[in-house]
Image 1 (tube, rainbow, N blue to C red):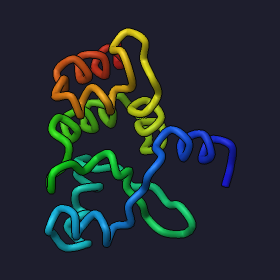
Image 2: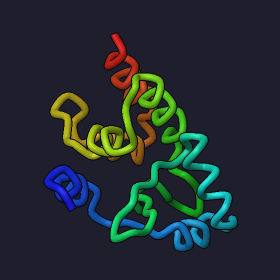
Image 3: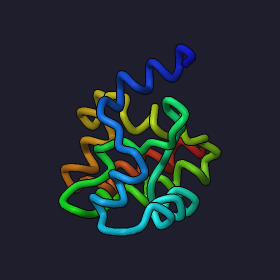
Length: 119
């Protein structure tokens, strides 16, 4: 594991396996992989296994506003790990990390900031 992986792991905290995420969303593991391809979720390899931040799933559903935000970040050219870094890094102007703002149903504000990254 490299230094960037360690930084992201420290920011993200809890991870879920594809199987755990599938159970939490009541879908198949293949559906989770499709969600990752469609930028509804982000998955990265950890310990040789694809993992998803646990914060991305709340109340049996994908966190509201996350798919749109991930699409904007992908359109801005962010790789998966860069998107995770941005989502979980505290931003004084929000306040808190963008993932926290999404959890508080402030997705429009988060997407606006993400769109500004493309400018």
